[in-house]
Length: 103
Image (cartoon, rainbow, N blue to C red):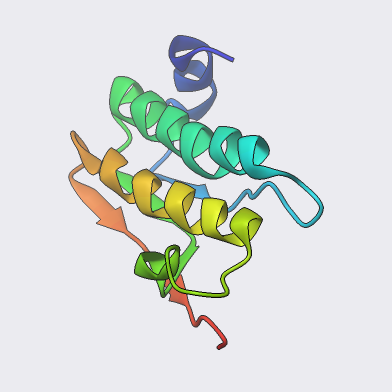
């Protein structure tokens, strides 16, 4: 889906919420395409449509991807979620509620 197509879908909304995720069983590439790229696509579409608020569901511990013992696929998830937080440009209201990371 393109930015303009998605912008047409969210036009008129007060806010958008990105709560999707690649899910268990998906690999490194899928973590990037969903947890980063799709979050960024929604943010760009929101800006294009004039939607002022963006909520990104994420988690704490995004800086732990390189910690010893972290599963490589989970590390990719953390990297993708951290990168997605950078998509705030152009949004006047941005919120990232974070769930706890269980150690």
